[in-house]
Figure (cartoon, rainbow, N blue to C red):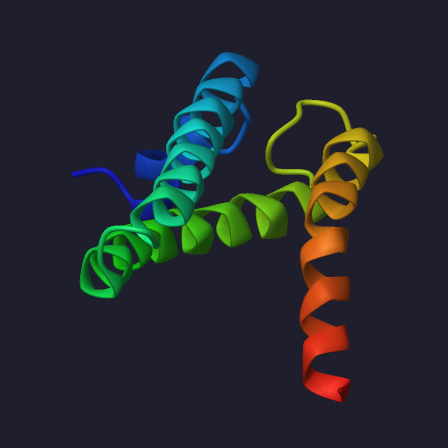
Amino acid sequence: MLSWKQAVARYQEPMLRKSIWQVVNTLIPYLSLSGLMIWTLHVSYWLTLAVAVAAAGFLTRIFIIFHDCGHGSFRSTRDSATCSDTLKSSCGPARLGRSLILTT
């Protein structure tokens, strides 16, 4: 019987190929669903709400990836500033827009 440390040992090092695939298969569907939400506004608010629920799942996954980038889990080197800074810059305008809406 393996101890839990031996069982998870192979997951301790990040794999760049899998990391890139996770970012791609999260951002593309999220951006597609965001565009679809804009398009469905002219059709039905209920349809937009249904698409928004799916987009919320991808947004949650984007947050998880951003959090892991901050800890350096997506790169094999400890220099995770590139990954983290890229996600921060892409999330920055959304946060700015939200803060402007809340303060007015």
